[in-house]
Each structure stands twice: as C-alpha cells, then as structure tokens.
Image (tube, rainbow, N blue to C red; front, side, top):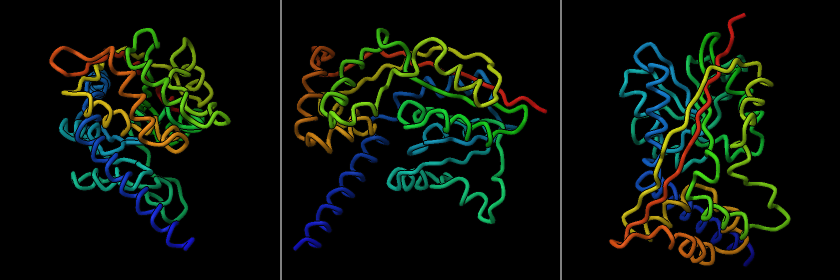
Length: 270
C-alpha cells in the first residue's frame, strides 16, 4: 500500500508541475518582456552575441535574443520547463557543467550571461553570480535582474502570501526583495570579481484578463511552491485570490504595476 501511495503522490506532483509549466509559458512569462528587451537593447545584443540564460525557464528571453541574431543556450533545472523550451527549438540544458563539458573540462564561456528570474529565488545568490562570472568571456557581460523596491511593486502584497503560508520553520527561504536594497547586488558583483557597468529600472506590469488567470500565472512562478507544500494548493489559491482583489478592475481584469531592476557587470580581461 505504501508504494502505491508514493507512486500516486509522484504522479500528482508531476501533473501539477506540468500544469504550472504550461501556465508559466502561456500566462506569466510575457510579463518580463520589457526587462529582457531593455537589457538586450542596452548591450546591443545581435549576431555577434553568445547568450547563456541561467534559469531560463521556458525560454522566451532566449527566443527574443535569437530573434536579434544571437547564438543562445539555456540552463533550466526543471524538466517540464526545459521540455517546453526545447519544443521551441531552443538548446536548453539541465546541468551546464555536465552537459556542456562532459569530459570534465571547463564549459565554454559566453559574451552575455543572464539571470532574469533565478537570482531572487536561489538559495545562494552569491554562488549564482560567481557561476555567471565563470561562464562569461573576458570582456563579456553578466546581466542580473531583481525586483525593484517593494513600495514600487504592487505585487508585493500578493508575494507576502507565499511567506506567510509556508512552513514557519523555513520562512527564511524566499525573500523576493532581499536584493532590492541599495548596494545588495553590487556587493555580489564585487565579490564575484566583476566590474559594475550600469543598470536600470524597468516597468513590468503584471496584467491578466481575469482572476483565474492571475492566480494560475502567479502560482506558476515557483514562488508559492513551499506554501502549497505546507498549506495546500486550495488554501494558497484562496489567499492569493483575496490578495488580488485590490487590483481587480471593473471589467474583471487584474493589473499590478511593478518595477524590476537590472544590473550589468563586466568580466574584466586580465
């Protein structure tokens, strides 16, 4: 009986993961297009650019870079998202070191390494920035994105649900605005041996046709996974819906104004 129960739970988890991946690709990923385009325009991404996207999810940012003529490859640990990216004819790997350098050597470096979504969610931001630096050619760039100040992000109230409904012993995990304060990303850059090269703030509204789409889109981000595991998907969905009500418009659509920040850092040639 125990093995049947475990098997059933695994099937349910996989089905949920597939649904979340589809919701991300169909609803949520387009919300950050202004951020992607701002970085690509600032760095003049084009045919001479080799882009590596860390935590590229279903690959929209890579598609936009490829549309500018860049050579692109992605790294995405979640199999369902990786599968969707590959369906778009993108080269997306699960382990950049093992799959790009199977012989144990150093993987090839790129002229632009991006972390558009992953930096705010990873357990070790410093390790991610160091990896990005190692995977960048001398003279190349690392682009790091974070949420802007919470007072400039109307989604902040909804994100608090993720922290409140997670296991209270694990609440030190997800902190979306931990790197939003002055100097936070800059310290990561300096410790990774990179040189600051500017940055900017970009308005990225989260806009949905209705409440159901808003809830599905937000749950697809992975931000609420710990809360779902601890409090259950129904309770998390209910409280996310309640938190969205202040942003509900007369026509039934939902819109939240948000600001994202990007930081550019150069790998200095030796």
